[in-house]
Length: 79
Image (cartoon, rainbow, N blue to C red; front, side):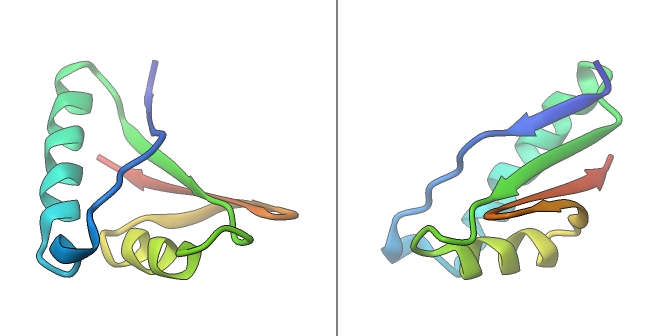
């Protein structure tokens, strides 16, 4: 359909803040566009370890808040 949902991206601690997550995001975005997607989405579970960093990274990459439920945040980025 129109959406590509990013389930999980894990960057080892020694490679964080190196731009690796953005490179992976760019690759996912290109694949999604080729397949006709109009946006990508991802989620964060605030109660999990590292969630603040995950949320900050998604926002820095251009994701916008789409939905917030108790202990679950959905973000979307248009392609």
